[in-house]
Length: 129
Image (tube, rainbow, N blue to C red; front, top):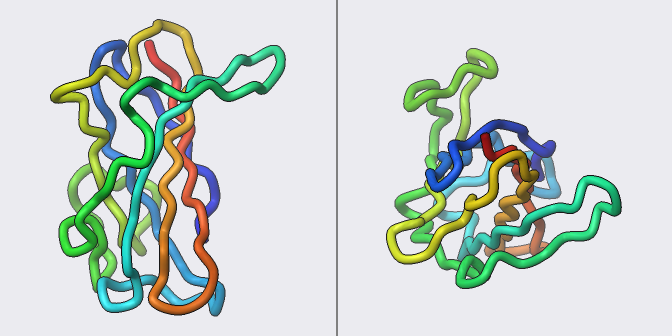
């Protein structure tokens, strides 16, 4: 599980989502402990908090071996602390836009399916500028 991360994205651009993720036993996830990961993107109405699915940005599958690291990483733009991250993926906009409206809040919600235990979310909040 991870604390929601916040950032900014350029309108029409993409964002790299990075987090240090632990399972329900408070142990860092690794490639061997994760069966699958998907992500979805939502816009968020600031006044009501209502989330709206971004078309063609729902339940996108990620390759575990490409996005989960067995050791903590501190490169690739990580500036939160010296401990590092073990999950990193880039929202794919090659076919469909994800962050199309300026001054809009978006949630990128990754869903981690572990090899044992309950499925859990890893949310990221970004604002398009």
